[in-house]
Length: 80
Image (tube, rainbow, N blue to C red; front, side):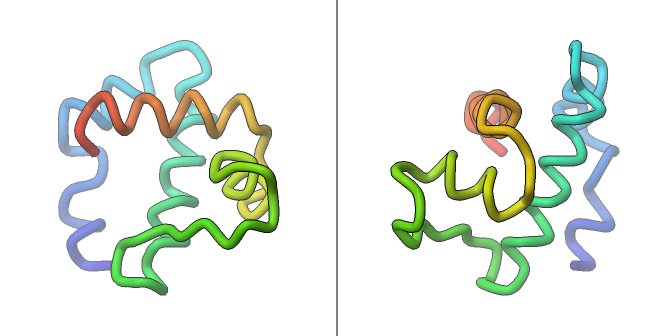
């Protein structure tokens, strides 16, 4: 948690995420994913509850599949 507090919103990638269309929603999703990952040493796992990982994440954090997909793609493309 301390590492998240030190880095969040200070990196250019985090700032850019907020500025894109829908960025506030994507930033909230990013934060939800970070918090979810804390219980497993920063990792997210696919349990097979849904047909794919994105749908399962969306269900878990109560967000739309499309918004989670955009967020995850952005994070992957930025190396986050």
